[in-house]
Image (cartoon, rainbow, N blue to C red; front, top):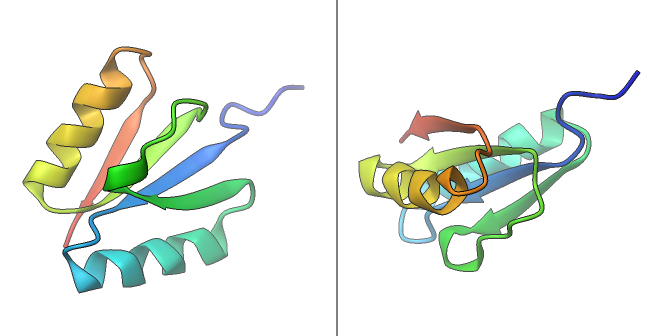
Length: 76
């Protein structure tokens, strides 16, 4: 059976120190995940987990909305 989310991207805002810390914590708990900053968004993921503020979430949602990739946000 195929996994629902085979590749998970954890995106953080590099301007928010707490966002990077949270991204690292989330990454340590999830297999098949990769961390990258808001400045280096990648298209080949099945789920985007975003750590930052409202602007970070909205920017990621606009980017991934084109491909219908689900976006889950954590406001720090």
